[in-house]
Length: 281
Image 1 (cartoon, rainbow, N blue to C red):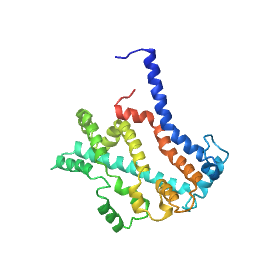
Image 2 (image 1 turned 45 degrees about the vertical axis):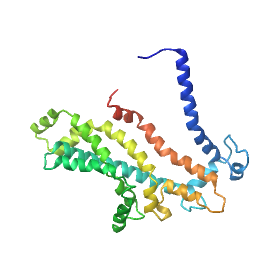
Image 3 (image 1 turned 90 degrees about the horizontal axis):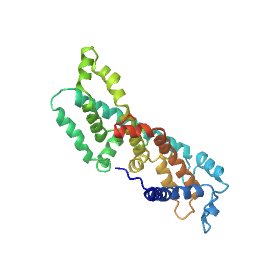
């Protein structure tokens, strides 16, 4: 039942505006700080309106970085982008193939294998981080983008989601494809993948943001500044000891770090909602 009361609409919009303001205010302050010179940021009270150093600060961040980290920010953004895309595409590829095998192939101990995959939900990277680090080190993947991506591409959650989706696909489609002489992989590519596109889009948004926000694993496997992700770079910019941190560069870097996840969410917003709700409208 939908109640149409003016005072209730005003109250609802007031709460939404207040919540949005509380969420946006810290981002606005970071943007203001990124547009001033360092002495202006350190002065009390701190300016609340944008200054005139916007282009200079963002240009210095992208081309030079902060003094504590000699790597330009664009390199760290590129590393984070490669990691986020690799994790997203890797998770989707492995999970959808695993779900396809579990649902459409009949082999011994099929469900046992599935539940073994499902049980790995209890073993996130933080729990198995030491053996994972040892494996990556033995393979010589430290300080490489492959070492950043590969340990994070397996996902029991994504496998479970694709399995549940495939189980809703009418079995008559599989029988019809078999009668038409289609091979299993042709059935997979021509029929299942188009049907699973909304679920893949929703999962891509979730896993991209997951990969972009990774901090602990990149902190362990990267020691060279050229391999830093953007979150590691921001942390290193703050580690200046007794020296004064370059807050104008750090704030500019933080604002730049927000752009890729926001762009992905905005571009894929409709597919993301459709994939979560299962609605084509």
